[in-house]
Length: 223
Image 1 (cartoon, rainbow, N blue to C red):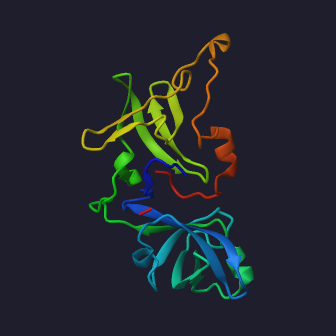
Image 2: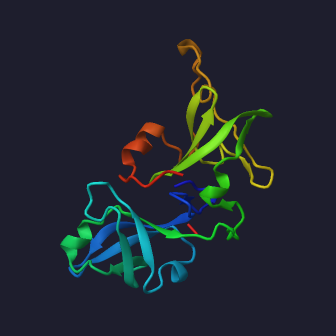
């Protein structure tokens, strides 16, 4: 997860805008409870009794295409633990581990924190590098270590870690995102010209993130 802005993530799977509000991480006890990693700064609203979540799970999951209804959210040692309808025991809970929870979002509702955006605000922004437009933000993918922007350029898609070192400025009103990527990210360099690049603290390689990513097939593009 990136650290320089509040990650308020969303995607647009169809005609509606949704936001990612949590991830199910570990079964808790024997009665179907599951620990929740929160991607929202308003858990009381997002995880109210009766809340219904769309699920991002692998296609082979028995929960694929289904929704999940919250019965109750409790806190144990500062960890959120949720009980869901039709999840009566630990075996059923383990079928939901790593599932990502999404809820419908009013596209007119905007985040109130500074340096915080929903994904649908970022998709389509012009990417500016050294004063020149080099592409458009196509989607945002969310991985445990950090989020990645897919930038569509005339020569193909480029993955850019969404961290301040590479993305110092986002101007939604102007429709632009300024990037300062290392040499070679947006263009090919001769092998002998590749510089020694020290990644900023907290930034990992794309290959490492992709290997840790949660499986799921939700369309690609907390509060």
